[in-house]
Image (cartoon, rainbow, N blue to C red; front, side, top):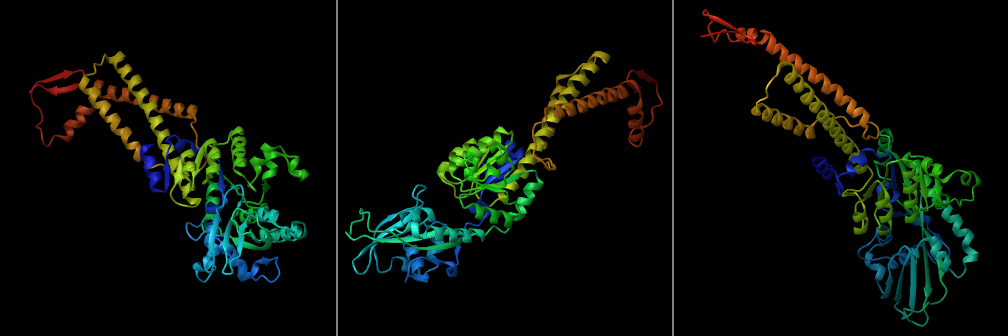
Length: 471
């Protein structure tokens, strides 16, 4: 297993717990993040598709507002995409004085920048999840239907939506709640699938591993991504996990059956991931879960194989069993194949250990009882050394990984070991009998060595183990 862990590390999967290799070999369900694992996490924005809600605001102005609400340094994927649309990244802070920046957090789900423009007026601009930004808007009731229609239109094309809004802060204080928020626009974000994701998912299915997409995006985006990757569109919203779905056909299904048959879930929060893992384990599945954030730690800890993806937080890495150093699903599937090869070697070792033990105990016991054979200590030492040498080679043995999830089938392993051990014990007894009771070996050895030793013409003595010249 130590050698196997080294091989996994070379493939970009660092094993923190040795027994995780066994569990990965038997994994039959993998719950995978969409962003960064199935997709590239390299977002692009189509300027022509930006939907503007405020009069006299152009698409270029929308991009500038979104860029101002982004980080200039230590950017995430969204910030990189937005700021990258400017001719010069410095434009995001040109002509303004930054007062306060609100970074993204899972509660607010938005970023915001408070700044003073060249005229000395204070403004606050924000970008983030459409629902959160919509709740800020002073005219929410008037634009809500149109906003949802645009979001659905984007989602049907596999595009995520990013909302942008601004407000004036008349009193010029950064702690001030400010004036009314103006919902400015919705921006489409496209995260292209990895070039090898579709092929890797097919490989996983052929290996008996069912990949389920777990995403925080909208259901329509999840279905479109699933369609492109060939992993199915049988996906459900997170509300179905709590039995709160309004669709009667979905609500009628038991939650455990729904989770087991689903291709994925959308609108998922970290607590939903934990619930998915718990229910799959209750159905006797060996479940793997990928994650990268602090909030993913409980689900990673609960899963049989917690996998922290590349660039995961320290909390996620601490809770996981395997840490990936390379992005993408292909690293995980390669690790599954390697784990199955390691597991096959472990099974081979167990079968060998059982069979050689039976051979030595049964075979040598028969020799001692039938022929009263005496074992010199030197012979026992030689047998032990040769046996250890054989076992050491098993770690480098060429094996064919199991095409399906593997597990310890102890009855099959011990039956195979007993049959092989019994056969070897019988052959050991027969071989000893041939050497002890016949002149089969002496005659052939003499024939082979006639060119070296002269033929004996003197008195010949007969011994229980053959006939030899007394000279």
